[in-house]
Length: 214
Image 1 (cartoon, one colour):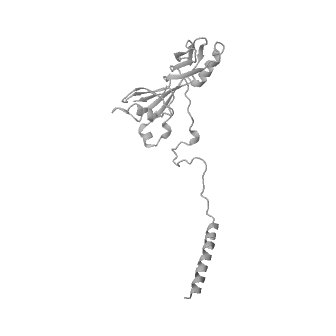
Image 2: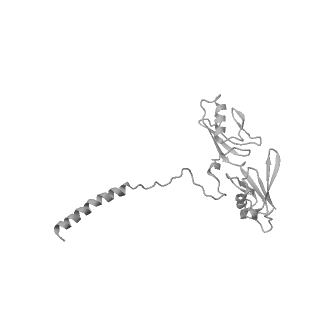
């Protein structure tokens, strides 16, 4: 091959490189699909995110409250909520506490104290949540009262009780509840719920509920 032919081949290869590079850059790559919002598992037992709410603690009877008024030690008190849902404080006497959050109660106390104290700053701390309890009785290893945690279910309460005795009839467990002065009873078959056959029976407990294991 002559030197002139080699020169033409080298020139041809050099000229085609940029063309191919330009063609490759013009090729469009499809953008990846992006889904907005949370992606939940398809398992029908999964709780949708829309149903999850931040729980706010509401004061109830027998709760112990530390009511502190800044720079007013004579007004500050540790009080127990009476069965009627009220507490007693100096200057303002009785005030409704049950059914309010600690922040709401602090605001209400501060409003009533403005007649006697200049710009009162009130803090309410729940030191003992005695109203938020459930009871497990019968054929369990540790019968008694247990703190009611947010979203606590029957299965979780039974777990807190340490399990069953050898004489327990786990198919005939029932939950007793008092609502508006009326007694309500829920049946609970432990074996069926544990198998996933009756998930609706594993209800969320309410303050004062009693689980009876015969």
